[in-house]
Image (cartoon, rainbow, N blue to C red; front, side):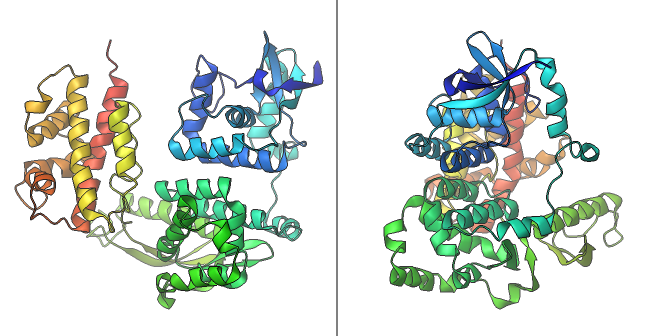
Length: 476
C-alpha cells in the first residue's frame, strides 16, 4: 500500500459521492445534503466538538486525490462538518441547524487544514474502512469500552461544558422521537452549553430535573415520560434566550428560576424504585417495545388474537439484561400536530408551513393548532392537485379534495394506515371535514386537545403517502 501523511486544505476536501451511508450522488452539495438529511444532530455535535477541541488526532481521514480535490474515503462526517463550519450556506439547512452552524462559523478555532492519509487508489483504503465500520472483527477492529471502563475514564472529567454535552446526549437517547425538543437541545448544546452546564451540574438542581450522577454516569430517577414537560421548558427557555447566561450566572436568580419550576417537578408516584442508567433505560425500552410488537403479532394479548383489546396499556414485569423494569407502555400523546412528519418532496412553501405549524404546542395553543391542521391539509391537497396537473383546486370543496387525494394514492381502499382518515372524511360527526372548516371559519368552534391529536394521527399517514407518491411518480 502506498500512502503519505499530508496536510490538505479544508476547502479541497470533498465527501465521497459513493458513501455507503447514502445513495450515489453527483455533486459535493448533494453528498453533504444526503448526510445531513440522515444524521443532522450528530454532524452538528461533531462540528461543535471540532470547534471546541479540534480534530481528533487519533483518527485521520483517508483521502484520494481527484484533480485539485481530495475525496474522503474515510472521515466523511468530519469533512461535511468542516465544510459546513466554513460555509454554513453551502446547502439549504433548516433554520435551527443553519443558526447553529453560523454560530460555529464565527468561532476562531476553525481548522483551515486537515492532516490526512493520502492513498493512490481507492482500493487501498478498503480494508481499513471495512475494519473500522464492521465491528470488533475478533479484536482486529475497534473494541468499545464497557460501563466500567467508561466510568473510570469519566472520573477525570467534570467541566460545565462536558456536563452539558453529556446531558444533551442523554436527551437524545431518552427522547429520540421528540423532533422540536431535540432541535432546542441541539441549539443549546451548540450555543450555550456552558449555561446549561451551570444549571444541571449542581447535584440538587440535577435531581430537580429527575437525574443523578454516579462515577460520571447519568441515572434516571423518574419515569422519563413524566420528565419531558419540565425538560422541554428548560431547553426551550435556553434556546429562545428567555433565560440567558447573564441572568443564570447570578446564583440567587438561578435559584429563583428553579423555584418557579417547582410545580412542574414530577410527582413522587413516578419515582423509580432505584435509579437506572440512561443507556440501560433506553436499551430496556427498545427491548420491551420489540417484545410487545412480537406479542401483538403473535396474538399474545388477552386471547383475542390481536394483542391488547383496547390498544391502550401493556403492563407486566420484565428483566432485560439484568435490569428489572416495569413494562408499562402507553400510546404517546403528540405534543405537536403531525409530529415527526416532514414533506421532502412537496413544494417548499407547503413543507415550510408544516414545519412552522409543528412548532406550536397542542395543549397550550389548541385553537391555532386546529386552524393550522386544517390549513396544512388544504395546502397539501391543493399542491397534490397541481402536481397531478389539475387546476380546479381552489374551487373544489375541502372534503372532496382530501378524499380525491386518498383515492389517488390508494385506489383500492386497502391501505390500512389510511383507514381512519377515510372514516373521518366520510363522517358528519365531531371530527368531520365540516368541523375542521369550523375551526377556521366559525367563532363557536372550540377544539379539544384530544380531538386535534386524533385528527393529526388519522391524517398524518395521508400526508406521508402523498409525499411518497410524489417521490415515486416524478413528473416528466
